Image 1 (tube, one colour):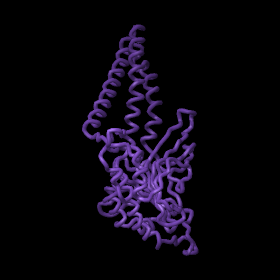
Image 2 (cartoon, rainbow, N blue to C red):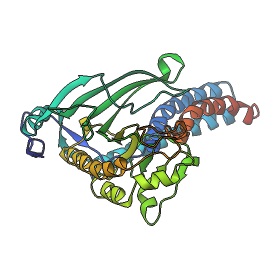
Image 3 (cartoon, rainbow, N blue to C red):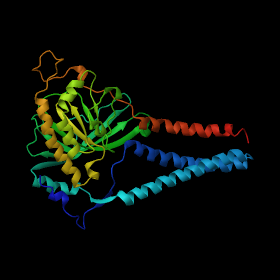
Image 4 (cartoon, one colour):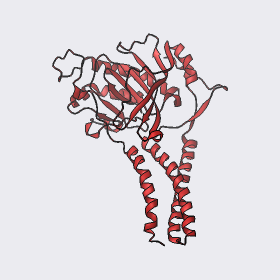
Length: 348
C-alpha cells in the first residue's frame, strides 16, 4: 500500500485538529458525569445555601455551601486535568477524510462517502437499546469488491443512533472505526477484546471468558459461547494474537458469521495515517485467520460439510457495562442526596 497521500506534511490550506490518546469508556462517562452533575450541584448548592440562610437555618445552608464548593473543586480539577493532557499528549494531526480520494486512487480502492448498505452487523439491538439508524462514512473497498468472495474487505467509520427509551433524552449517537474481512466459512461467535485504553465498546457476559495462556491475558480478553472453548483456541491461535499485538494494538477482533470484524472505539475521522496503516495491517492479519477458518467445522452439526454453526455457538450473551449503570444511577442518587440533606441537618 502507498500511504504517501496520508503521510504527506500538512499544507497551509488543510484543516488540523489536536489528536489525543485514546481513553477508556469509563473515564469518558466519569468526565460527562462530573461536568453535568457538577454544574447542577454548583448551581443548586449555592441557591439552596442562600435560601436556607435567609430562612434562618445556618447548618443546612452551610452543608449546601460545602457541596457547592466541592462541586467547584471537582470541576476545576477535571478542567486542569484535561488541559494538562491536552498540552502533554495532544498531537496536531491533519483531518484525514479530504486526503482519502488521492489515497484511494493511488491504491486501486473505491471510496464511498456514505452508505447504508453494510454487510456486517457490527452493533445489534438489545432489549434495552433500539437501533434507529446505521450508516457507514468514508468507506474504502477494493475496486472489484464482491462481498461473497473470501478475502473481500472494507473499512470506514460506522455511525449509529441508539434509543435507550425515555424520549429524546434516551437517544445517543455513536461512531467507531472498523475493518471487515470476508472469511471462507461461518465461524462461532468469538470476541478477542483488547485491554488497551479505547480498544472496544463491546460488552459481553463475563461468564463466557476463556483464560488464555502465558502473557496473552495481559493484552486480550477472549469470549466464546459455553462449550466452544476448544473451538475458540483452535481459531484464535497464538500466531493470530501475536500479529494483533504487533500491528493492531488497541483493536478488538470479533467473528460475525462468515466475516472477521476489527473495531476501534475512535473513528478514522479522528485518526491519523498510522491508524490507516494499522487497519491495512489487520487485513493482512486476517489472512492467517482465514487459514484457521478454512479447516474449521462445527462438530455439533450433523453434517460437517455444511457451512453452518449450531445455534448455541452463533451468538455471545451481552454483559453489563458498569460505567453505563453508574451513569444511570448517578442522577437519581444526586437528587436523593439533595432531598435528604435538610433532614440530616435536623431543622437547623
